[in-house]
Length: 212
Image 1 (tube, rainbow, N blue to C red):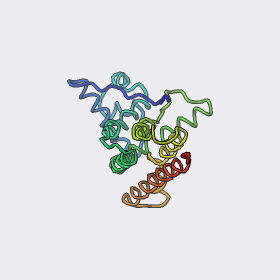
Image 2 (image 1 turned 180 degrees about the horizontal axis):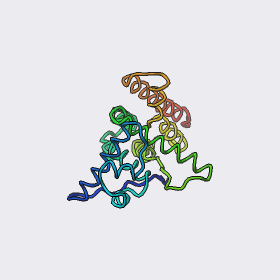
Image 3 (image 1 turned 30 degrees about the vertical axis):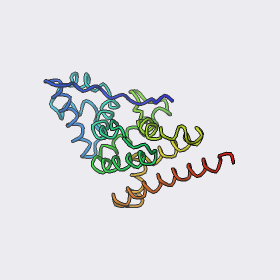
Image 4 (image 1 turned 60 degrees about the vertical axis):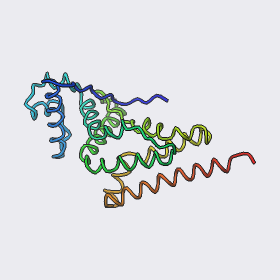
């Protein structure tokens, strides 16, 4: 499966360019914290950097948001689980990710806002900038589910992968927080319960389908 997501601009390793990159990211996150979905030009002004310079680092809002989300969730995306069990791998992902949703709530909301805006404009044929594409969760979950490859049929793995992707993301956090007014602890426990239920149901179905 090919995962099409907005690539993250490569951050300079050191020196003045690295400081400029960091200053632009910081400025963007400060603006987002005030409820603004900033343009690259607004970020440049906030960071006291020329527009031309800012666009060299972040040529679009999509690239800017991709970098912000990567900064927020980077450790989750790059940590390789040592567990041999798919269930333990998935639980580990949820345990590591949802606390970061709490810490970077405004950044996650901005990313979702931009994705929804771009999807609506694209459908209307009015999108005039690079679309922001999410989907890192697909690859992350695929790695977590690898131990199941030789245990259950591929169609069941694929369905489980899709089902988990609906709750391993900010959308589930948003529903429970905004609609149910749930606490962060309630959100984490509810999402963990859903994930375990999906895994257990899949394993039970696979066991039932085995030839007698």
